Length: 335
Image 1 (tube, rainbow, N blue to C red):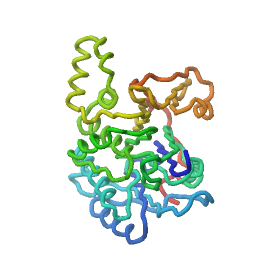
Image 2: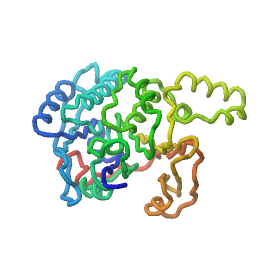
Image 3: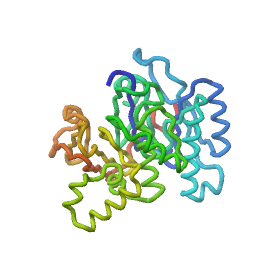
Image 4: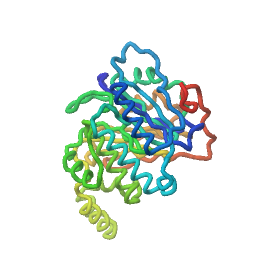
């Protein structure tokens, strides 16, 4: 990375408030914050609010106002109907971010949150005091923007509800992907191609009820010569999926990590134009662009490999593990 973007997504960090939606927001100024809070309170009951704890770091310059809210749906209809509630929240999130009025929702999910900004990842982690949190699943990203600006809202991860995405590469099919997804009410407004990936997986997995495996076949399907060697029934099924959702195929070099409360899915482009390495030990699965990064954080590795292009890597969470103990910055949202 080059210091123009770093960020983290963390799951399991708010066990005390796990029944409420944790809303992380950036504001350009106080008037923008007041307007957002007016809109938020129209639709949600705010249980707790305050600044996200930060510490001084000489490498972090001109941060926005960074705030956190814990909310529950106020409207009884939204509270009782999960599908309608989720659709409303997606509309609310993308609407706020597309309005360009100085308020940007960074994450809006239960027992998770995104922490990101302009800086190197290690400085962003220090700034947000991430050493004071405990979580069971983490993703991290260092950005090197090429075609889009480096700004706080454009750093990775990108989040929609509890789904987060980090991405290395360039989506050359972005315009086709964006036009398709915006026909279904999504709005791409954060000045980076990665944003559309989060919306594609939300559309396919949450709205249409597909599995992540089926979604992976859409965004990174097998090459035609590979299809010719498959069983006829399997090849026909993939061909039909590819025909129906041809505008959601991701072209260009990419490696992505999709995270949800249930675990991660990592995926390379079909030609493997971006690096991706995976490893595991008895407890953890880790995925990174370089093996050196994995060996920095994972010990007693039992397997390490380079996945094939278009071949998903899965890391599923064992929920028989005890809840993470909250520490100071993560305990209920109080600074």
